[in-house]
Length: 91
Image (cartoon, rainbow, N blue to C red; front, side, top):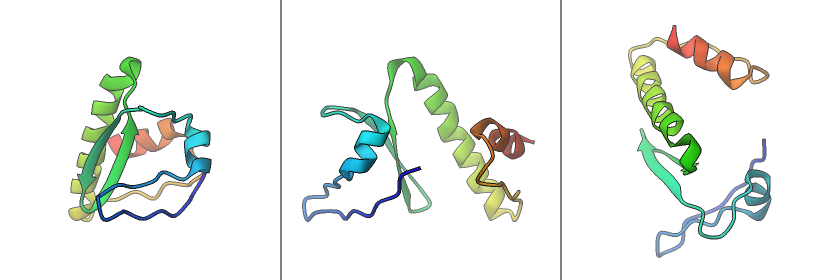
């Protein structure tokens, strides 16, 4: 996973650093779903073939945030696969 720091311009624009764009395969005119979850801004590339999965992801994140607020949480290891983490969160 690539990590970088960026900032927002006076016009509300955010530059995604080049190493992140290259790693994610982001090209000019790529479209994103942008949502705010408790102050965390998340960008998710819109891909026709995965739009349904993206909407499910948004719902999973929303439910996870609710569970955290209720004091329910599960520790996940960063070496785990996405599917394993999803399984933990959904149980």
